[in-house]
Length: 477
Image (cartoon, rainbow, N blue to C red):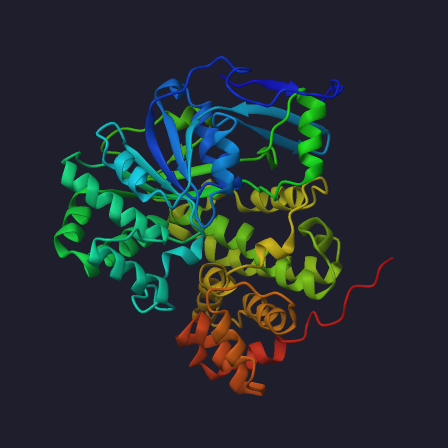
C-alpha cells in the first residue's frame, strides 16, 4: 500500500533511517528479477509493481550494472526508497516497497539462482541501449571486446560474465538446467522493437556459446516489447534534504520523477505477471506506433536538445527549451516525425499526437525537474539509430529533405567535436573520424550511425551544410 505524504515541516536532528521497521508491510516473495538497478527502474517498473493490486505477491530482486553502490545503499534500507513526484505546485512522496532484494550485479551466482527458481516469472531490463551491443546493422556485434571476453568466460566455465547480456544468458542457462520452464523477459530500454532486440541479442550471445541453449531460449522464453516513459533526473543532495524535511526520515536512495508516467506493453507472460494495468499500464497487440511516438517525439527531442542545448551553453532540458533556436529545431523535428506517425497502422486517433506534443512541451518546461543534458547526451551513436535515422529515412523515401532529423545528427557531430567529455560506445571511432576533415569527416561519422545513409552523397552534403547551426552560444537576456 502506498504511503503518501505531503511536504511538511522537518523534524529535529537525528532522524530515523527509512527501513521496514518504519513501514510495516512484509516483503513479497521474489517473482521478478531486474537487471539495471537505477533511478529509472525505481521510478517506473518498481513503482508500477508497488501500485499493482496484487503487489503483495510480486517482489523484485534488482541487480546493479557496473557498480554495487546502489544495491549497498538500498540494502541498508531493506529495499525501501522514496519516489518524489515533482510538480510545479510542490512535491509529493511515496514509499515504494516492491524491491525486496538489492544485489550487486557481479553476484552472478545469486542472479542464476533467482532466475532458475520456479517462482520467478518475469525478468525486466533497464541496461541502456548501448548494452545490447548492436552494430549499425542492428545485429549483435560479436566482435565487441566485452562480448568476446564474456564468451571466453562462459566457454571456460571458470568465470562470471561481466556484461548484462552475458549475465542474463548465464542465468537462463541455469533455468534451463533446473527445468523451471518458461518466463517473460521484458525490455524497458528505449529501443524500437525492443523485445525483438533483446531476443536477438540474448539468442545471438547464447548461440555463440551453446547452440542448444539458444534453441531453448528461442522456443521457451517470451520477449515482451514495451514503451516506457517517465522523466527521471539524477538525485541531488537537495533532493535528500527535501525528503528529510517532508517525510521526517533519512533516505539515502530517493528518486525524483515527474508526476507523468506511461507504460505500454505487448507480448506473452507464460508464467504470469503483476496486475500492472491497475497502476495505469496499458497492454496492446501492436506496440510499434506507441514505441515510435515515444522514441521520436520525446526521446528524439531530448537528444536534439542535449546536443544543440549544450552547444548553445544550456545545461538542462527546461533551459534549452527557452532558447528560440532550440525550440524551433524541436518543433520542426516533431513536424517531420508526426508526418510519419499519423498513418502508422491506422493508429492516428489512438496516438493523439497534437495532445502528446502539447503535453511534452509542458513536461519539458517543468523547471523543477533538472533533467541534465549531459546525461541525455550519452551513447548518441546508438540512440540516433532509433531517434533520428528512421525519421530521416522516411522523409527521404517520401521525397522530402528530412532536414530536421538530419539536424539532430549534425548537432551530435558538432557536440562530439566540442565536448570535453564524450561518453559513447564508439568514442574511439568518433575520435578517429574527427581527425578527418570536410566531407570525409561527415561521411565517417555518419557511417558509425547508419552505413546506408553514409553512402548517400546527398544526405552527407545535407548534414555537412547543417553542421555549425548551433555554434553560437545563446545570448542571456
